[in-house]
Image (cartoon, rainbow, N blue to C red):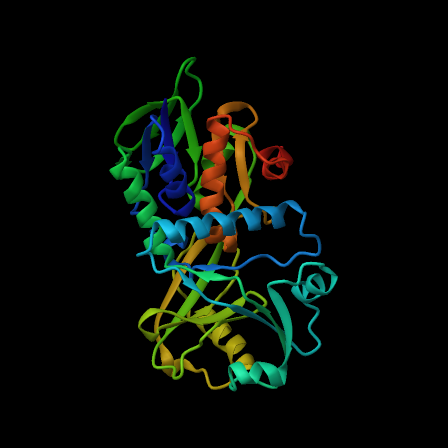
Length: 358
């Protein structure tokens, strides 16, 4: 079986990793380089979702994804997986969905609430704007660039082909084959997986007639010489700070719906810093050593798309993970593998089908 994968980010590379273990002829297409965009610029937080009902589809996918990451951590010991707890901070008068979900959830085994005074035993620099926090023990952090590269390198070592070309379109009119057209050539396949992040939308629209994925820009500040570094990851809303390798702290992030512009902006720097100063007042511009920006793929309901396109059973979508792309990526890739080889799928997976938008 000839299988084409469009996209060399976390979703595409994970799909290639699992498919390369079969006897299939796998080819990965990437227009830039492996993990060139959000997969390589993500802070790599792998945090279990806190939902009211642990049996919702997204909770079950989160559990499955964590299980997959724990297996990859054993497989690739050199990827810099780190077991790092997360603290979700609550500011005063904040109506936090995470806080409400925790209070209404029955599963408190791996998380518990802390008061501000208890938080300050962990980090005394937390401001008076914080009322408390939710400590989540079973979280991981990974070098997302290294993870994506390792998954793809493994697939190439197993015989997969890597093609550094931009896919222009997919021709579905051929009776026997699917055809990928790049700027340089034409390639025939039995199955195709579309996994190229926000750029997947045009390919999907050509086939389904629907806009399903929107690029959401996220910007991050990298900071140096913060001492002491942050021993755990702190989150408040969509914002976070975490200290990684070589004492570089990552501070983010924005959530900008402005199209395909990936350039860092001064305004985003100010927004990120202003948000951070409300939580950690000592932070300022003198610590910043780099600013990055990337585009995340978001669907209309903020949930991933995993599965076949309805009007062509041989074309699959694997993406839309948005800010949870690193968490969900390997699980989405393993699920596409199961789809292609008709392995049994848990029923909740069908809730992420593209059919919900068509």
